[in-house]
Image (cartoon, rainbow, N blue to C red; front, top):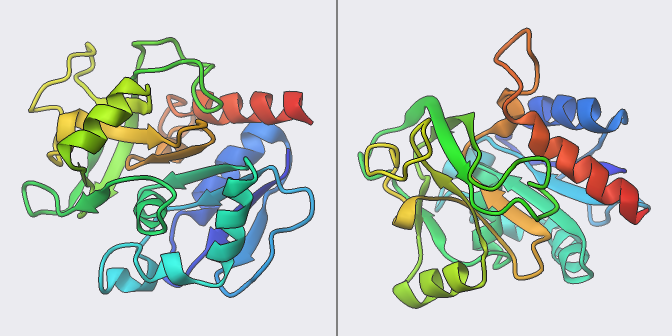
Length: 233
């Protein structure tokens, strides 16, 4: 499996993401600059990591979505490639039209930096098959604009097509208002494309991949990807 991580001005989670992918795959991912126009030959996965691309000016992810590299990312996704967007990367995916909806200001209008829990709604995707359906895992949220929004028809479509992959929940797996700290519609923490190969989520699973630092709750996501792409090679 060969992964490529795109770095934009203001990105700050690329090294954490690279560590998570290297632990899962045994291979060092390529680092791409936002001005690049092509993906490396043999790329299996593109990751848009977290941070504050372009200082979050205009709208979070809006300027990054227009970067030269994003044309190649869109073409890759259109060919059935796997694309993972975390936090600012999720914002980029919606701004680029690769996922529906938008990420608005948190309901509290405050930046949230804390642990949260997510419930796995589907365990048959390239990103989640190492989890069990209904399993809850811990991750770190660090965002000011993580409030997922879409119109009711789009939300109903996402639900009907099984494209809501992760929801904010209590450690016991209950989807409650208190667990949904940023106010996302229907407690949505992560959604996928129709072919399940593009995933966007706000919390950072790459924070939880080392037992010596903050546990390994996030590791199954990266192991799922590694197995999926290794079997497809």
